[in-house]
Length: 356
Image 1 (tube, rainbow, N blue to C red):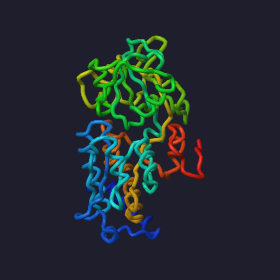
Image 2 (image 1 turned 60 degrees about the vertical axis):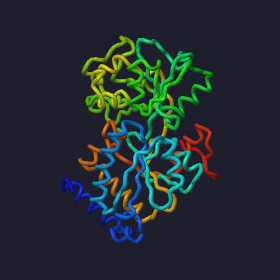
Image 3 (image 1 turned 180 degrees about the vertical axis):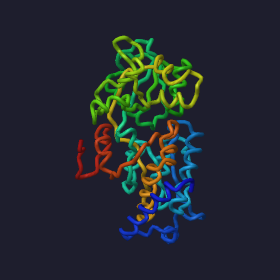
Image 4 (image 1 turned 90 degrees about the horizontal axis):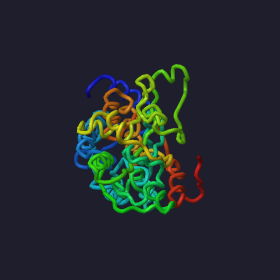
């Protein structure tokens, strides 16, 4: 273990789980025959950003979770979005994953025994949205200006990169002269910068205000429907706000600035690339388990992830801008995704309705 911080937190988790009567020891995992060296837990990761960074970060998290639990975890970056869905549907007893919203909804449509336990929390929000990015000089005012242009997206299975924008475009009768599939959110913005298309779609994030805002307005929060570039772009003067008024929006532009300096820093990118429109909100991605995953081992892993992500070491890994930018997690069940299912026209499990 890299520090006493996680060790001490683990003691609290272990006591809580033992008090609940769970089989949390390595022996318990061995009895379930999953999490051993010969039969490791498979952890599926979507290739939503830079695969090399996902692999590196996944390796470090898997090692830390092993030190917390004694469970062997074999992380795997899926070849594409469809491959992760197919693997999660077919898996029995040994697989967990961090599927995107649409991946989870599609997997559970086929195999309802796939189940989510934790939702990602980013900067205090359990939701995100889809953003449409374009060069400010293009002068696009809304998605209605995009007809006849070239659309850049990451993958047909991406919730914010493709599924939700495609639904909105089809509803408005917007068609394109061409499309470019980039393979990742960051790649989509790089392709935009290189002139491969006219606009790109990808995930959007709530703006984070400068520190003084909460000092004078305690509890203030941006909510979906407000100006999506609050604190980073002044639409009246068409320029960056003064430094005093600057916050940050940790969206694809932020991720790209962390991946390459070829196009300048974050503020250089924000000067060039703006948000044309947003679509959502959408429930965050999740930590999900396959059919027949042993309940005691699952509970142990859920608590270990909570402990890890809330430790200094875990924060560095999970919140990496070129990993998945999880700052925390929250307990959920399958109903967390019912409103998304309703939004995209997927069946909502019988007897349930979207609870907004």
